[in-house]
Length: 435
Ligand SMILES: [Zn+2]
Ligand SMILES: [Zn+2]
Image (cartoon, rainbow, N blue to C red):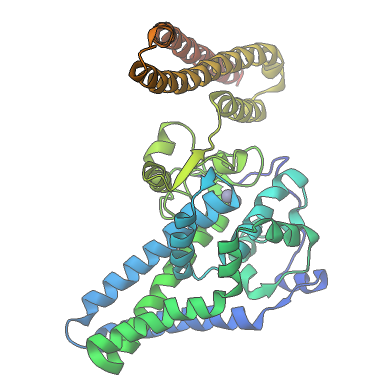
């Protein structure tokens, strides 16, 4: 695994030491700071004791509660706070989806959905605006890696950040009434979900000691859910195999922990609105959150998923390849190959665009056939079905032609892509021959 290497997208460090941030207007958030420190210390110190002294049979309930709690907290964050709300990955999120996930997200203990998503919008928007000092969990502010890791992973939450108009606007933009309601009542709601509920359950099952044990089990659950999210901000912005174009994020293909969000963070930063978190086959294998969103669509709870077109994907991948190959090539070799690579890249993109257009036509045609089918049934009932049936025949014939044309377009796309990658391989050989 390669460590991160500076590129145009990696800004210069802003601070040398943690204490430098006070001059920039930061102050300690004593409320959230003490809550995070105390809950972590208590979970680490008291959990083993709780398991040792737990009333008979309760340890299984404690373990199950911790795991379910962590899973619910993590999934509600990745599916809802992140992809659906921060990034608008679906054009239509139905009211029951909002209500269910706003309740589940209380178990994440990472701030209200409104605040979480507004912070995350800023985390991405600095990729375009270049205002890296606004990134709430930047992994590039400090000149040393260990400070960047600690800051982006957890320390950022212990401080009040200076007011910014950008954050204020991002917060106000998340204006769905259910999201605003959860934000307003966040404190009592998380107390009920994370403290009253497990303590009450424990008391019912095994008295006051049971209540104490279940409190720790629940707290361990939200601590796990918190670190699940935080590793995306720290680990995947610092280590990986494939650097993205827009940010310090990297694809590392191994960090399955955050329900798929850690594997393809570079892809995600390069096309954030996508309901998927990674391109290509590895995105399919390593992205459980995508399955959850597809299941929601299957249930009719979300509609109109956004995804990068083949052309957009190809453009991102080709630009990364050209950047990396140029950086590794001797300048004399690069000059010989630059034009050829650009031409092959353009041909690949043109083939991808053609494919996208066929795909669009197929979607339109399917819709038309469905509509014509419904119309002709209505017409048949009124005994005037001739023109409808003709239309249906034409549409079906076009669909047959389209199938064959799409087959060819797919082959062309594959061939152009292969030519581009073959040229990259030959360029590599040319570099090695000179060496
Ligand atoms: Zn990120
Ligand atoms: Zn994101």
